[in-house]
Length: 288
Image (cartoon, helix red, strand yellow):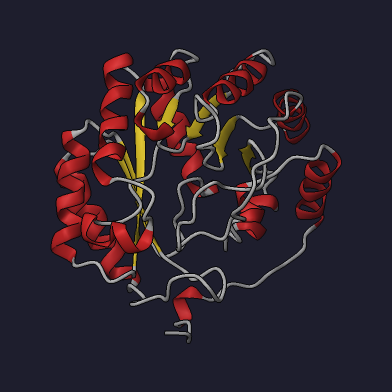
């Protein structure tokens, strides 16, 4: 399925703000998931001085077939990275900061310490900055989850990605139950912390399966949900099985809200860290 419908076509405009954001990130040698995942929203986000920082290198130790991030031998942990991200946050005047990472199964704590150090550096700026993280599953290690939770991010995110029946083909090295349990462990460690997850559509899932995922996430006390369209990032990635119409995304948003989520973003271009979520998430953090 190669031909994009009209609702999935976007124009690229290299505005001065886009160029400024890209230059700051390059000069500070900071990776972003926007660039490495080939996100379709990068033009808009960079154009608003917004970026999602990707820590712990460029190479992921897993081979998920939906992802554009490089796979291979991981780099040494860059101990100076948290300070450079702090500088980027300051230069970009960010009020809501999102930090994600490649999966680092080679590290004993899965990279939890680098998340903590990055959160602490950003907190040292002061002010009313809110911090959202999007973590790997840490191989289910409770100690890693607790370590990051104790650093007090405002939102702890971990994506469920797809329905259980597709896990073997979409993200073979991951486990649906383990991901749900990670969200539960965050709430056990700090019941007041907002948790967040996301799912992609268009990989061959049935709507009934998607609704079951909603139930499972609510059962894990997940607060925030994002629902977006899977788009094939490169020739070796999984094929798109279906382009979901925007009206279907709106209907699923209403369904999800009826299950009890505090906030739901649903649409073809919705991603876990999409800029358009920012203001609502900031409000949720301030109320929590």
